[in-house]
Length: 104
Image (cartoon, rainbow, N blue to C red):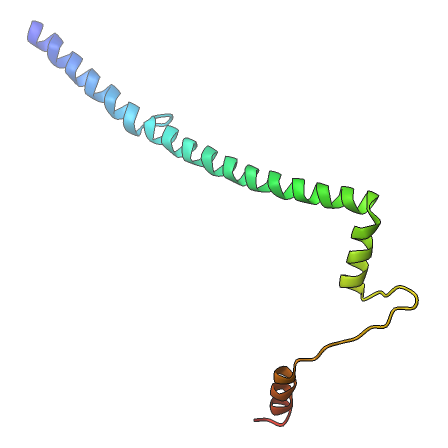
């Protein structure tokens, strides 16, 4: 009789171990969720840094005329009254463009 009880307990223990390792909510799922949490934290950190950079840029644009002027010059090509625009063309680039235009 004692052997049967011990055998039943061993079978129950094995069944519980299998469920713990492979069943829903088991250790495998916990490890998978921990990995997803770590990935999400890394993504959140990346987005937080991006948001801080954008927020600083917005603040600079709201309060700093230099940032607005720099952006207008770089993106829109704007000049102040009385300024002259000079465009420098590299000789090597010009020679290469001529060769491309003639099909060489």
